[in-house]
Image (cartoon, rainbow, N blue to C red; front, top):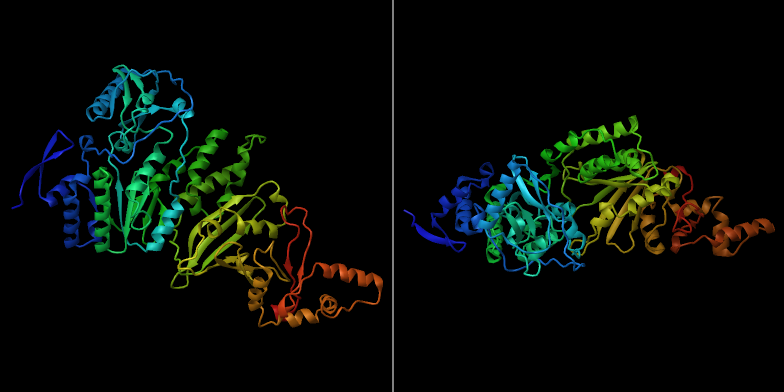
Length: 587
């Protein structure tokens, strides 16, 4: 029979310490039993029970770290005050209960500070209320702290690279907020003062609503799990995702996380922990070994959103959709008629065009596909499509069966100046714009090796293949175009020598060099450049010399680049064009 002993928890609280298995069962954490064997289930329970003090069943067991203190540095020495809201007797009872709970758990204390922020009760889905403060005036005079919060794209890349098949999501314990595990420094406490019918109080710990609270917590958690972050775990403020290839590895990773939390005196909330799952909800998404998809429970608000009547309502709707834009093909194009209404000089006139876009977004979001994880050992393809209003792209790869899998959809709306460009020029920024995963977020190499992308333009009719290196990036890009007569590349970014060497590989079967030499349009230029020969007629000779001035012959291939002035192509004096003679040999 297992030994039973008493253990002191959080100073004055005493409880009975049970057998580790029973300890774990009493926590009532979620375990995906269908994903593991009975023996593995017992091992997991043993690990959880052995680390019982990492979990807080209630606010009395809430952790309090000593690694970091939150400081509220203000630009204005004068105290800020907000008008106190009035509440009904029923709401005052809720406030009184919340105040009692916060006092008992050493979260707040009485205050005589001249600062004052108002209490707000926010109703939660389970019909209880969240106790928060209106810190807007305090936040206005608070010096902002900048600290990077992970993007969901980074989460996808990391999990994909690890090839994880088992996941556990862990949530930090809360009283009213997970932030309560971080203490406030002595010089900041009085700035969080609030008034209630029961008296005036100030927070002793970090609280929800302060402008720098997320950055502080992210900073703390990054420090706590520094050696594990991006390797076996991911941190988004107070949410931790642990990922592994198999159960034994997962057990080891969980133990490492538990030890780090224990050292930092932080606790987890059992109800927010889900262990050994094949798929897990994280940051509004469902992550599994197959990829990432939209958490349908998070899109209910979008599907039920009424037709916007004002710019504010429309901006709110687009804000919800924008978080999941990577799941919607041609998102920028679909949204173009809606985003037009957000402009200051445009009248808010809701027509059938906007109505169609509104309903299309709802439909596509509620039926969004599963996006695959990137495999960094394989080529990527980037399909770019430009319209009159937007640039959209699809980033993907082929799986082991040769089937194309989408990694992300993306793009952006065209600026007014860009809308006047030719369609070929619009697609140029599609390969360079900073929203494109392939060219901005995914700047490899892996193990020092260059990675290849294939970019498809007009995929069903692609007839040309052009390789070039992106300037300043370790990425080899392959573009496939559907143009019939010649290949035109807006402002090729690689060096001419490197380009020609790669370009000629695409045409080695067609003998581009010989075709150019035999072409009536090109032959005079070759004769002038290589032999100094010009026509006898003065006018023709001058014309040839002027044309040859902007023509470059590279290596033995004698490749010709013709420039062309573009008035509506800002930042580029000309577009370099590799001219290919129209010939059956080239098709």
